Image 1 (cartoon, one colour):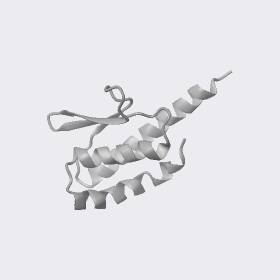
Image 2 (spheres, one colour):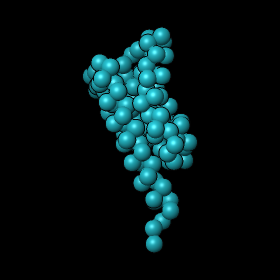
Image 3 (tube, one colour):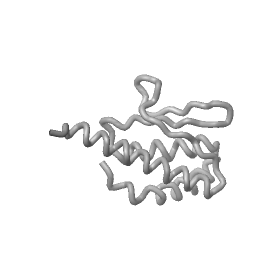
Length: 108
C-alpha cells in the first residue's frame, strides 16, 4: 500500500519541476537570466535562499509543509532577484511570471 504522505510529497516535487520549467522558459523568452531551481535550501531554518556562482543563481525553496502559493511566490521572487530587476521592471515581470504558472496554481 502507498504511503499518502509519500504520494503527496512526490506530487509536490513534480509540480515544483513543472513550475521551474515554466518560469525558466518564460525568463528565457523575455531575454532574462535563467536561474537553477532546487529544494530544499542548504541553509537550515530558511524558507528560500539564493546562491550565486559568478553570475549564475540557484534558487532554493522549501516545499514541505508550505502552501503551494508560497512556494510559487518564492520561485518568482527568486527569478526577479537573480535578474537584479529594478522595482518597476520587477513589478511588470512579476505579473508575467504569475501568468506563466497560473495553470499550476491549483496544485497541492
